[in-house]
Length: 134
Image 1 (tube, rainbow, N blue to C red):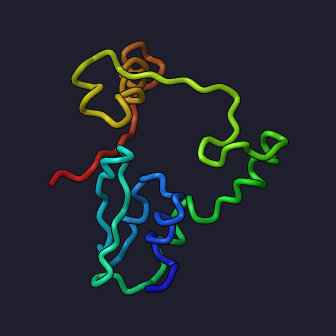
Image 2: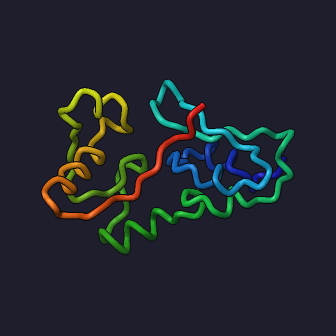
Image 3: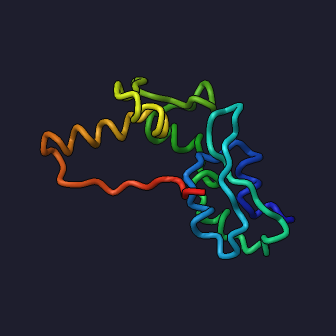
């Protein structure tokens, strides 16, 4: 198997778990599975189904990111830690609604913000996605 598949992106640690590769794979050769150790979703390639077309690799936002250039353009300096990168400020948060927090990605932060924005009329609607039900 050549290195122009999503497997290379995962091996290089550049996968964000966005699922674009899965959505566009014409052979349905990729499944999204949870990495229990990291607590994130990662694509797993079925090499028997894969015809090595390279679409998954080409649509992936992770494989061609030039972090050095990006950091220099935005922050004027290279990152001290490639895993964290440069940042202006860092925040954490989660929904205070138990059901939302534990049934959403990353603690339901975005879900809770969207609900708030809908309730107070900041937005009229929101388009969101979810994982395919088994």
